[in-house]
Image 1 (cartoon, chains in turn green, red):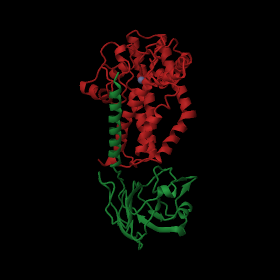
Image 2 (cartoon, chains in turn red, orange):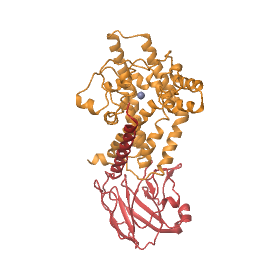
Image 3 (cartoon, rainbow over the protein chains, first blue to last red):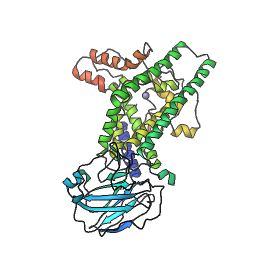
Image 4 (tube, helix red, strand yellow):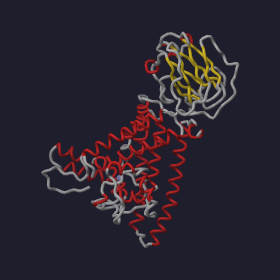
Length: 186
Length: 297
Ligand SMILES: [Zn+2]
């Protein structure tokens, strides 16, 4: 039988391997197999300074450098090529909770070119911001549900799983660049 | 490269899990038929053996029943609850799934070692070890709470940011690899494989009640954890399968509940609260210092 010391050392080594391994996995972004042509009819409202569309290569997960006064984020894991990604940015808890269109700080429709879309907003204020988005696959301008479940891609800040419904506080992000994931149930 | 990093949905992961699990179960019956043929040729066929296979699958049924009714929903609920507090968000693709399987294998090692060295956990895991035989049907022999035991050990993976579905898949994958090790049909594989991977030979040792083989080879897929953490033993002398104190009756009911029955008896007859707690948290052979009575395993 291993001694007590050996056991403690074993647990320590295992902890390091598990955390290290998970970090490695965290550094591996997914890519999407869909690459469709760029749709030039995409709306470019005044608030959108830049729309970068690219498939991430292994290793470059996190940050596209942006100036500290922009809110910028990349939505990863877009699996289907149809429709647009509709992005909504809220700045207060009430509007966020009620999906109040009048309380929106920003609203964008982004066309899909590859597995990721990136957007950045200038002069949007200091934050905190809560972000929600969905992939309007059928073009009805709304997230389509079947029963209780979305049949279009959706996601938002603070959403760890497809079933998260984060509070404004949990969903809050500041200025700078962020990464989010599109979730699909169907 | 591209294929490995393609995004996978939760349903795809779940689909693969069900697919692999179901086919392996069917395969296990075909394999069991071959093992019976082998037992027959060696004239080792007996009613005891047939009864044992029967017991194994009945315990599986009881285990699935308990999981389905009580543990299943709880397990899933805990995973999704915990995932809200994850420190990272890890994408789901075959590369990250592969990493998760390796990490789940380390967790399996510790969970398995815990099951052998903490008496209350042993009360459920002892069921799996109580068969005096060793064939693929033994892999499906489970104790009442074998489904809850792994939970705390896999939560850290969810907390680190792996998708709960991926963690379920990884757990299942380790378990299914383990299933394939329950056979006397293979001797030893080439040395390099025996060095790195868990093999039927290593796992026969784990199921041995021989003194040299006790509390050895806890590994799931890889044997390197046992080699690193000082719990490895090589298969040398012939393995005597089963418990140090064998179960008296091998019917499904006795087999399924003998662990908790023995634990209950031990706690009941031990004097003093601290000693009673000791019976629960100390290794199976533990006895309070002043007590002469001997109950082993
Ligand atoms: Zn065991």
